[in-house]
Picture 1 (cartoon, rainbow, N blue to C red):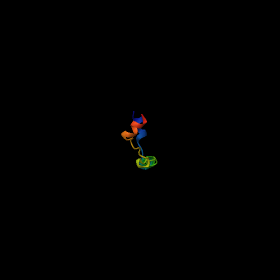
Picture 2: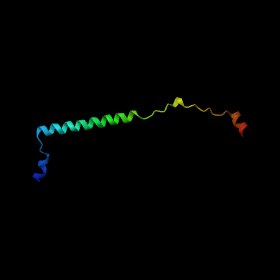
Picture 3: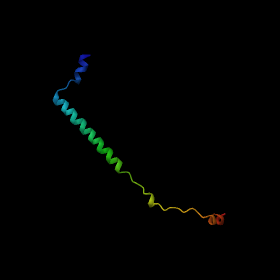
Picture 4: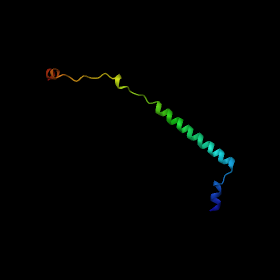
Length: 63
C-alpha cells in the first residue's frame, strides 16, 4: 500500500508546476465560459412590430 501512495509524494518544484498548470486550466475555462455567454444574440422586444388586437367592429365585419 505504501508503494501506491508514493506516487503522491512530490517535491516542492513539482508542486509549483502542478499548481501553475491547475491555475492556467481554471483561467482558460473561465475565459471560455465568459466568451460563450457574450456571443448569444439578444433579441430586442422593441424590434418586433406589435400587433394591434382587432376592434369589436372589425371582428364583426370578418364573420
